[in-house]
Picture 1 (cartoon, rainbow, N blue to C red):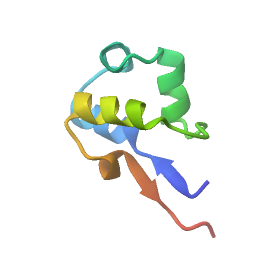
Picture 2: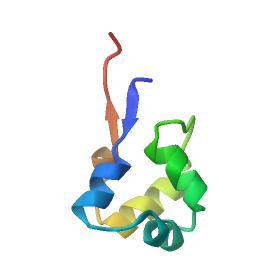
Picture 3: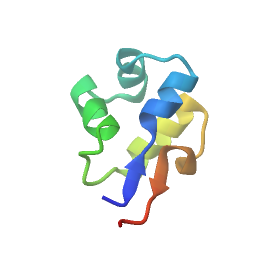
Picture 4: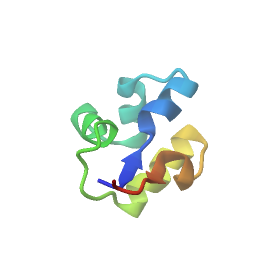
Length: 69
């Protein structure tokens, strides 16, 4: 998939656990794992907004487009 979710990088930079992040954003740990592992097919803007608010980042810090080979 050409869109890569960089959630793991941002969590590591902030030394935040998946449990803490999921609680603060309002997602289940299972849904955070789906995002981290690149299995998500869509993300709601409200979820993206909450993720950016909690991580104090921009959407571009979490999502990256990578050309398929």
